Image 1 (cartoon, protein in one colour):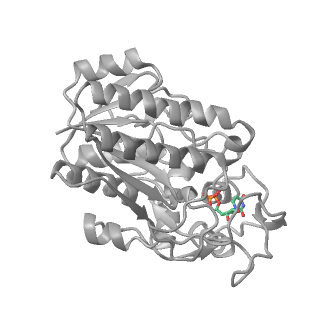
Image 2: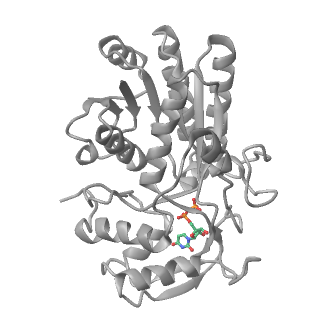
Length: 329
Ligand code: UDP
């Protein structure tokens, strides 16, 4: 089977490409390298540098390659940036997906697995969150991802394009080999920021708010290992290849950790004291986000294998301690 991975040079995309190749699949990658890294492209994948908003470019790849299924990660994903520059998100995420779907429909390609997010829910009505719960994004990033999900729904209705949308909770960790990992510029995510302290790149980690209605006052999140996310994409492709209908699944461990607990675990893993300082709440942060992933477990047969937070942080530490500047030399 040949799988086209859009955004295969990014964080979750590159881990999914590694997992596909480890499984013996043939992989084609499209990435514009705006936020992805050429060093993260698996040497066995066929790589095309270009932008999904460029119809002629996407057509040329689909003309040339015989693709069975598409996995779509090509999007901007910084919540803060989406609030100051929402139109960038509508252009790349929504318009990019529209162009991609036009090309897929024209080429008779009708299977796509899509990288969605817990940000589609916004402030949750309850935890754990079910796929049927209210979707009311509190930031433009989540809104564009929800728009993309709806574009798939109507394209399915009109053209029979089958999709699986995977709503991730907090992606983290790195490939067990330590060869690829998380490398964002600017970095905004909790675990890589914490690990900058033992790397000597940051004095202390800031805790964004300690007056939330949680057990220690800091926000609770559901941290899910990137390799477990990668496996879910492979299961979702198999699900579509078997002729199943379009569907939406949450991906998380179903267990929440507070910011304090994450910092404490990182102290244990790295053996570094990691000072923490209190800071203001960050706009738009819900107090807690925890997934119910029962649906993915039951229907896709998904089983997270790196659910232990200590193990998750240990894989991240292996990557960051050997690549303190990410992919930059
Ligand atoms: N957070 C924090 N300090 C930081 C970065 C993040 O306290 O320097 C908190 C943030 O408020 C949230 C949690 O850590 O409650 C996870 O944030 P992240 O940006 O990693 O993921 P998000 O939940 O926004 O997807």
